[in-house]
Length: 148
Image (cartoon, rainbow, N blue to C red; front, side, top):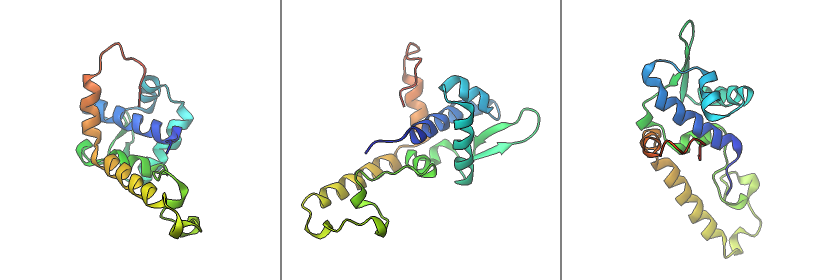
């Protein structure tokens, strides 16, 4: 499994939003500057995140964005699914029946891939934005390039 730029940037943007929303709504341009994500790309991500009910926009002077729920109530898995990230390690264990592998019943590795997919989802669903924020605060100031 390899996460796309969409998923990686969405998670970075959500952690950034969680880290900075204590002082009011966060402007997209500030996230763009801190995370080195293009304005257009972030706008695209925020449409998906807003549609998924993970963020809210605040209109007017001093407006911007904020989390729709507590950072402790939003998992990394939710963020990745909101931007249509594929979390299965291989196509043949995807939930969509049209992608079912014709060899599934006789494939010795199918069960392994399915088990790996479940563990990936369990991990991503168990890590919250609040936990990622805590980890981010522990990073050294010299680590200026985001690693998510």
